[in-house]
Length: 385
Image (cartoon, rainbow, N blue to C red; front, top):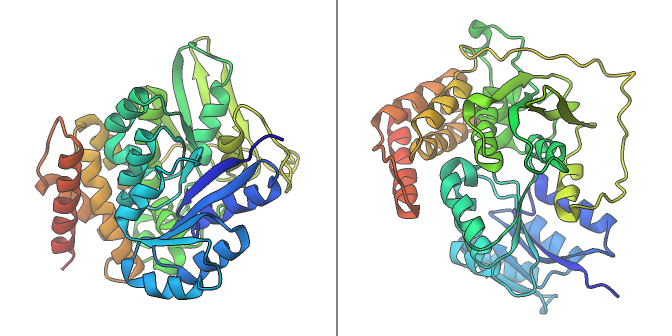
């Protein structure tokens, strides 16, 4: 009998993590959970551990360790750890075949690096890893012969469109965006939106942080940076198309003019499962696409209204640690907006000002990224107050 593939899920209590567990449950003959991690949600993490019986679980927030230990007292076989160091160490465990990086933010960078160095296949859902340190991550993946399989629906679509194309040159990547909840609003209307408005995404059910980033289109800016690194193209070869139906997940145009796209209903389980099973396609329960019911529309993004997307392109042009600066400032203002400490348009102002003030480094290494992240967070926090 074939051994089950052992999967570690970093961020198992978030939107991607919970859907990954659904995929594993549907294919329990093929996959097994080796490790689950969360930042703060101890109750849900304990509940998941009771159901999936992993070898280990990690709570990143060390203050919640005793609480988690207590919730797991009836399962002595499941090892319980806490803290950032434990996250770095658990991904190196021998039995693990694949690490799904579904943590949100800069915190996902260090454990991803540890997993790559340990030779674990990476199912990449933490976009900040490539936004902050794309060049470093690709160098490490090459050095340690570690495959990186994209889980973002857009990057998975591009990846799927490239299967079988081998060395055929890419002329252009067509990266689709829903446009979020404010696509049809004027600048005047957007100035007064609330977090409740921003959290109502029209097509995707995602975590709060990424939903706000989608509303500002910073999420799409980050995906442009990710695509540049994942697929080895220049930013000018990546065209963002606002596609409100979220049916065409993205497409690739080749130098003969032909365009290949991946279509489907908005369901994150599909790209998660494809990363787990590649190159095979496994059956997946759920809704099927009916093109008779869905018109397909495409619009150009308004870069004045959604300046975060324009700033992401600027960060790519400048290179070095500039995307790291943008990401750090964005994490601060995103949290502030969710806590009603910052207006929606003010987020872009603070990110732009942080880009001006933070120390620029053209050739950063890991230590520079860590310093840059801390400095940019401090500047953005000061600008908020």
